[in-house]
Image (cartoon, rainbow, N blue to C red; front, side):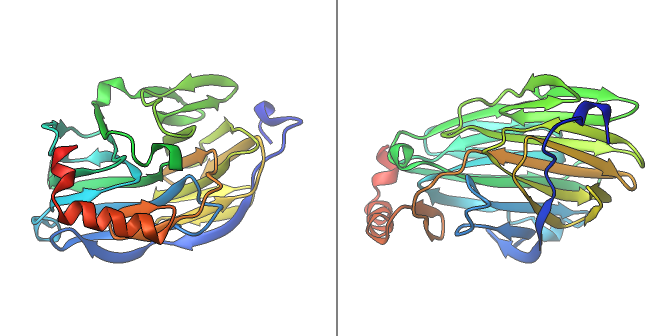
Length: 288
């Protein structure tokens, strides 16, 4: 056990969910982990991984489409991502940067992935909005790579904090995104074989780990590339890289409210979903 984690309650793997291949937008190939009705996932709803060295897998991108009731955080490990929305926001995300959007009562946007160096690799995370925020005005912000908080060492590899706050080897670090509807931390850990990191988490928050490269050990349980590990409760997490690895850590305050999901809309009741569909069909999203 690391000296940083003496007398703490270490989290373990509760369940492993394997990502599944699917497509979205204009035929874009992705791998998806969904947890819309899984309280252990909350406040997160879905994680989509886009990874390809073949332009045909994503050339159609994600043409204009609506959202209501969610936040999205798009993080590009390699490649660019072009965002445009009906509010006039245009963002060109570079490798290592992130884009955040709170859809609230309604947004219409398009997203176009762009390969860099012969490779494209990114992740889009859906975060639920509490009922109090689902009909608030939409918001958008991009975070270029130089604004992402980073902590690195020979022993622990590199941690990049995109959202919220995290204690790394005993030191608290905050990311640039602090506006999510409920507290939510998202971080990227990149490590070589045998490197170990100790992370302090809030006991009451849900936490999960998605491995996008290599293999990571969580208290004796291997989590492999393409797998999401739902973690037990606890105030700390110790990760060991079994090979050159990369993983995204998600931790957040659960939202104890009903989740009703229909396509790009996530609300609290079917009546609210029907209203969202009607509002969109009547063109009201363009007026927000």
